[in-house]
Length: 412
Image (cartoon, rainbow, N blue to C red; front, side, top):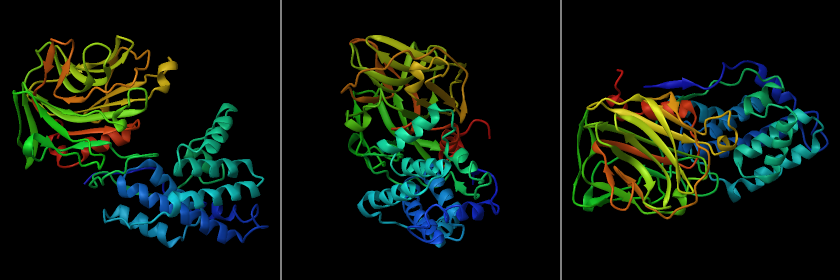
């Protein structure tokens, strides 16, 4: 089973950090009590996030914060142990969606005169609620003044360069995500174990099922190693447009496994939200010759990033496309990154604009170039996922390594 370490090994630095909370809050509470309360809420939110995705970065950072401010915190230690042993994580009921904890953290911020400690606590608030306006403004102001506002850097500024080891099982079974504010799990997850009634069920919890379209071949078949996959040859599936899938202007990641029968076709749609006219948002397709193309549509002008690597027919590949819209304005960054078999691919092209939201359905194994030109994928597709955020390189690699799909890897 694959595991990866997120940060350096644990040492006594955590105890030193815990002691820092005593002085600035002494007027309101004892230091250890404050540290315990800070850890209590952090563990509760971490457990909620990690139950959805055992590799969730926000969850692991909150757990590290809890173990650093309160190294002997029993709930934090138990959560760490469960993660490392790939056991079922404890369920935590978070009263009022964490509002009480956020209010408490704000009260601690008001009572401390230490700017580094204030920033770290604002970062904790952002980890709990990524859309908290006060935290975003505080962290952006600090960033504009030259401060590194990444979690590890903020903790290191207080002497916590060495954080607790948390070995995350990247192969842990994904839990259904709850849609809505702050979601980190997928908004669509299709594993194609069956196609009963012409429907592939979405296991993400968002209800974005895929429905069989047209009369070409589209059926579930044995893909080897006890795994099943979607066989396509002139047929395709579609997912009805939903608010959770309006992602063209927002951070998102598309991921899937595919095994093309041919790469000589003029174009093959893999996963697209794409029709003729202006009803286009985003998509992944194969170009003539087998290069992976990721597209974003802007005002009728199609922007494309294309892999230099070409795929070989008859082989399995894991493909992920991660989009960060901030890179559209920053020409020094590539806003759209293509990953093939867990590694970022060398690409050509750049995304120059953002699309309008479209009510076009998502198509699996097909895309329209015009009203009369259709491009079908011919081969096998499996484990289709759509995330409403930009996955990082380690998260993409964990998808590539996740069983049973990893048995299909080309470089075993």
